[in-house]
Each structure stands twice: as C-alpha cells, then as structure tokens.
Image 1 (cartoon, rainbow, N blue to C red):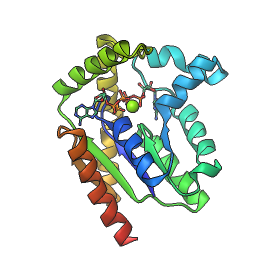
Image 2 (cartoon, rainbow, N blue to C red; image 1 turned 30 degrees about the vertical axis):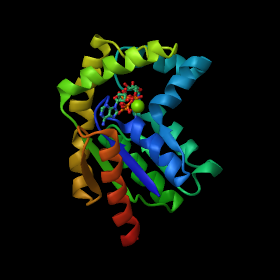
Image 3 (tube, rainbow, N blue to C red; image 1 turned 45 degrees about the vertical axis):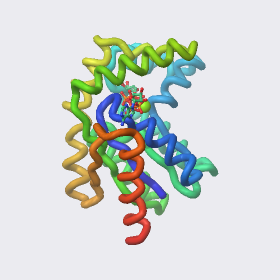
Length: 198
Ligand code: AP5
Ligand code: MG
C-alpha cells in the first residue's frame, strides 16, 4: 500500500496517516516531522530548513526530494508507506513519479482532504492548546502569522497538485470536515476499492 495525503495545514493528514500506520503496518513518512527532527539535531539540513519553516514557507524541492528518496529505500518501507506532506509542489510530484518509476513502485491512491479554511485556524489553535496541556513543545510554525503564510504557500504551490493527480486518474477526495472517525472510514472505503482493483 503506497499512498499520498494531500491537504492544507491542519487538514488532518498526520492524524489519518497515524491511524493507517497502525491498521496496515506501514510507516508514515511526514516530511514535516523529518525536517523538525533535522532541526532538533541541528544537522546541515536542519540548519538550512529552520528559518524557512518558522516563516511558514516551503523548504526547497531539492532537500525534500532527497530526504524522501533515501527514506523509501529503508527496509520498513518495503510493504508500503504513507506520504504525509509530500509532494507539495508540482516539481516534487514529478520527482516522486520518477523516483517510484526508477524503483519499480507505483502508487495505490492519492487522497485529498478537503477542508474549509476558517476551521483550519481553529484546529491549529486547538493543537497548540492540547500540546501545552500535555506538557509538550508547541511547533514553532503554529502561530497565526506563520500559519497564514502556510495557507498562502498551500494555495499557490500545493493546491495545483489536485489537478496534477486528477489528470493521472489517481486523485480521490474525502470531506475532511467530518469527524476523525468518519474521515477514517471514508479513506478505508477508498483503499478497499484500490486494493480490489490491484
Ligand atoms: P507539515 O508538518 O507537513 O505541516 P502542514 O502541512 O502545515 O500540516 P499540519 O501538520 O499542520 O497539519 P495536518 O494536516 O498534519 O493536520 P493534523 O493531523 O495535525 O509541514 C511543516 C513545514 O515543513 C512546512 O510549512 C514546510 O516548511 C516544511 N515542509 C514539510 N514538507 C515539505 C515539502 N514536501 N516541501 C517543502 N517543505 C516542506 O491535524 C491538525 C489538528 O486538527 C490536530 O489538533 C488534530 O487533532 C485536529 N483534527 C484532525 N482531523 C480532525 C477532524 N476530522 N475534525 C476535527 N479536528 C481534527
Ligand atoms: Mg502534520
């Protein structure tokens, strides 16, 4: 099972990817999490990415393409993986297509979570409150200014991917405004029909 989650910041990509990880026993490949780990380690990539991420902008295609290409070669990805937050630009989608072709792999589904932008700001605020309540560290890009920029970046650079994957026939859309449980069950229906077609 190889799939992509598309959707704006706060759409629920990470929430749903984590649930599928448990169900299918395949890893969640969140480029955001990988970049945050690189920032925490203060690696070269982390040092280059930090200011860009804090400002709510996208890290260069070159950096994320390399991270993903290396990651999908890991043994734990042999049964599949869930891409959460990658690809995020048309050039990344083209690079991923080439990567998969070179490795002899194909995608089972591209799932877009459709959500209304007003709700996204509220979800980000909820996530901040929950993180603080749990004694965790709030993401440095979960503040109104960076979040606004993340939405602009999404609209300008990531939203065109829906067209890209609609054209390849791989795009499936789910109403991300429904409850977490309903969204999961809609995704499971899509995946059941994708595996029946395979
Ligand atoms: P990334 O970490 O990918 O952040 P994002 O896309 O902005 O998305 P979020 O993680 O904020 O949202 P999500 O969709 O995962 O929602 P979640 O499940 O948490 O990227 C961060 C940064 O890294 C980027 O800005 C960029 O700088 C860099 N980056 C990463 N990938 C890159 C790439 N490919 N190219 C270039 N740069 C890249 O849910 C949000 C909240 O809502 C949670 O509190 C959750 O509990 C709640 N929630 C979830 N579902 C529901 C529901 N159905 N109903 C009600 N609440 C819900
Ligand atoms: Mg996420």
